[in-house]
View 1 (cartoon, rainbow over the protein chains, first blue to last red):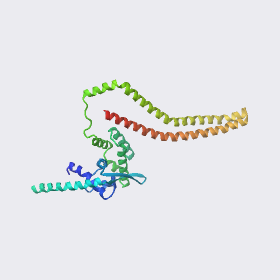
View 2: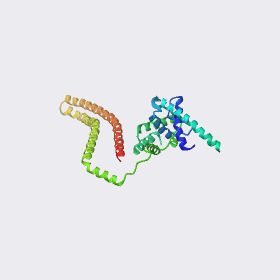
View 3: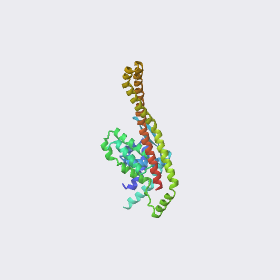
View 4: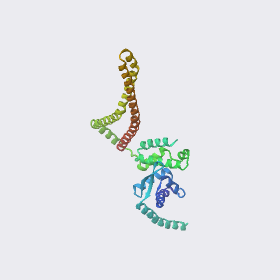
Length: 102
Length: 197
């Protein structure tokens, strides 16, 4: 996949993972592994950015004597996913046009 | 490489590249490594797949400062140098005051274990000398005085040992506190110098 296209989609994949339930770093990477290649180092800046945009919120939970940071999808995040899906309809129209022209 | 070394190196690299939010970045990798270890992955697999601390810090620094640092013109550099020299009586004295204040802070912090250490040495030494010399006093002077000196020797050694324990514990915590304080000051200075440069 084109790197720029992938970069744009990574954030939405992370948001989509959080749509079903709150999750933490390692679990997010595992959940997205079958869909898109998301490395440990790539995820951290994405989470930071999404938190800054208030698309997600974080809280800590004690797990085996240590703290684990969980991320929760906010209303803004949910709206972002919907915005992406709406935009994608337009992309699909262009895709169909390009495909049909070949 | 093991987790401790990785985290230590990451801390150094993040500070070197003046990455913001060092603590959160370290907490993220710390948690991630723990989770992967918990899932049964070996340290070798984890540290082979992870980027190196240098790569992580560089990547984050690049995200925070995409264009990198802009090159300053030689004229502006010369102007800054002149201003720094002219302003040295002001900033020099302020910097000296800050340095003295920091040094005083460290001195005050370390006064407790230092005093406890001195008490430890003097009480133990005094106690031992008192114990050794008490038979001489018993024979040459009065037996009761010698016996009292013998008892006092034990008391002094006891108090000395308590001071020793206090020195050990206070020093242990103060070392950790001093290290984190020094790192914080270093980080603060690097940020200030970095934003001014």
